Length: 224
Image (cartoon, rainbow, N blue to C red; front, side):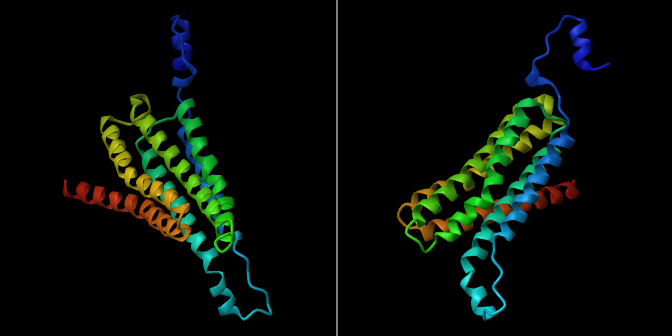
């Protein structure tokens, strides 16, 4: 007999947002969106024609490859952090599902934002394109941070008491990335290429910092 039915028989009310939802579906859907978004990124890079001088043609596409790396690193960093967070969860609920969908909304938009930015790097609309890309990255970063913050404040979703402390540590790490992104958004209005360089720094940090954190955690576990 389910917990909800037992509570109903005893006259207790069950709030929809507190009902437990399957974590496997939460992860499977998220992983699918991450994988599709990364695949779409590479499909946006055009292949030089047969008549083209291959190496010069590839060099001319440096902005496409740069955009691909920046967005790949961003999605990869988001995926690693998302995977780390869900290891501290035993289940989800309606609120966590909705917040996760908000994250995936901006991740799914990233291939379009990337294509928009690299297409206009040398065009009159470069400031707007770089700014819109940064906004997409910022909103995705904030959505993940809010998801982590919510999960950390919901003991019913966590595997144990230690998980809350670990998630709070993850949130503190993310402030650096958010700060770099806000600086990049400001620079997009005056020096778009500098903003792109900052996006490169931010997304690389999003990819490297979680990996370093996981390595330190493994080393501490072995020491104990």
